Picture 1: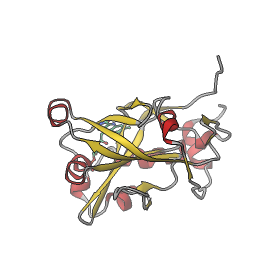
Picture 2 (picture 1 turned 30 degrees about the vertical axis):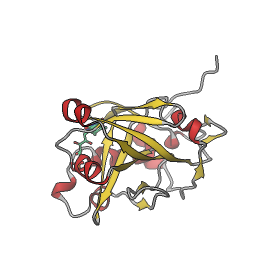
Picture 3 (picture 1 turned 90 degrees about the horizontal axis):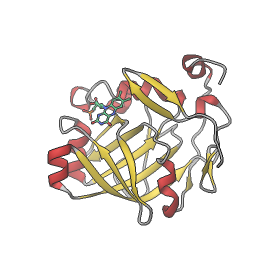
Picture 4 (picture 1 turned 135 degrees about the vertical axis):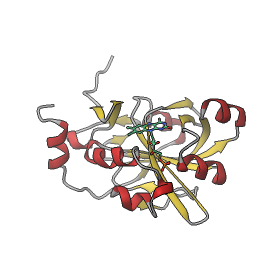
Length: 201
Ligand SMILES: Cc1cc2nc3c(=O)[nH]c(=O)nc-3n(C[C@H](O)[C@H](O)[C@H](O)COP(=O)(O)O)c2cc1C
């Protein structure tokens, strides 16, 4: 990559989001490279979104995921109440919105999507919304593990539907042509890496 992350964000033209269903057995590939995600949830007319770097695939088929969601978060409360959430994989172009979603609570604003400059779209099987402008989406139903959630803030879930923008993920592979479309990997304090070049062994 030749330009800085900030330049890429500034150069990023808003793209319409395209979504194509991802075969459930391949849904783990959407998270296998370790992207920071946006976690969204909804319950009784309220919706919310937060950033989460501590997520991972947990099983192939049926696909499962694990994500650490601090029990202080409003997103966590909505997930516990609804039993559902969505993981959306944001591109470099949304880095400022990701940081905004990770540094304020939905408890303190009317609508955190609006407060963070994010748009939502309905999911297919869960009430939690998808985040528009992302690269991939996993619709998840909570697997109740109250001891793990209580002790480690660790939420496990089954992926019931998965989607990706075919411009960056198709036939089970990521392929990034534009730097602003690459996924993000959080280090700390608002510093990220963008997903790099593919290496085939
Ligand atoms: C890049 C980034 C990654 C984060 N990763 C996590 C995470 O994996 N788990 C977590 O509980 N909080 C994480 N956070 C913090 C939450 O996003 C933050 O507490 C958020 O304000 C919670 O919002 P809410 O109360 O509206 O749900 C992260 C924050 C940032 C900026």
